[in-house]
Image (cartoon, rainbow, N blue to C red):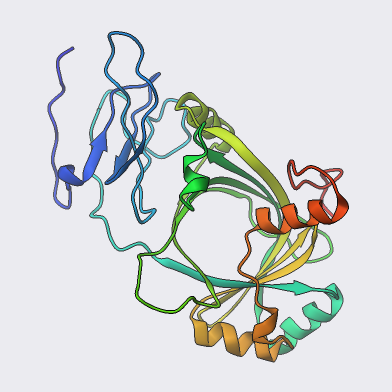
Amino acid sequence: MDQPRVRRRRNCHPRRIFCTNLFRGDLIMLSRALVWQPPAPPNKPALRFAFPGAALFALFFSAKGAGLDAPSPRRLYWSVRQIKKTPTEIEVKLRVHDLADILTRLTRFGATTHGRVLEQNTLFDTPDSAFRKTGRLLRVRTETPAAPSRPAGKARAILTAKAPPPKRNRTPSRYKERSESELTIRDPHQFAKSLNNLGFRPAFRYEKFRTTFTRGPLHLDLDETPVGTILELEGPPAAIDAAAKALGFTQKDYLRATYWDLYAADCRRRNVTPKHMLFPARKSR
């Protein structure tokens, strides 16, 4: 098979990108470090699957079936914006015991609401759980407007990648810190099929109703989950501490756990086997 001519443009850095061969009509381009490579069929080149050490990655599928804005599937290479430093997510979780009370406190705090949605999340991993073992995350999330108790949010679907932040010589932080990169996708169901075709498998599904608030640089996400209500504060550490204090919490209340951690702990308490963190019946409420 003749190799197509590589078309280079300004801000294009081909040496920092791994390009795969076509795989069932889809082109995958990811940046930097190789993490996992599925076995190649006989007499065919291996499919190179790369994932960045800092969770900054570019996943590009052809327009034929992956649900991403992409060029024609006939083109095997296209321009990618210069890779920038991945933003670091800094957050804490706070367990909420009185939903009505925290809503009142958020209003008094001056937080602006951006609506309530039903989140349906699926974490994908390799067959040998390489992402989980290395502290990484690859998630497809769909958001459906949820009403009528509070204003409804917008419908959308998001692909998220997370990884441990760059190593630093410092004492352990009281905040949960991870490198994070997100990408909006048009068709999450088709995108999930494409991930399955690449060898990824759904590892954990979880649902929650999320009401998003903001105040200055701070994001405040109120999550109603099958294992209780959680308030997430994300932003600069000083803003997190000030907001937590204003809302009636102390640093002793800070949780760095993931939703899998919270769900698994709840299963241990109830002496049941962890599976997926789902509501008994899916409905907007």
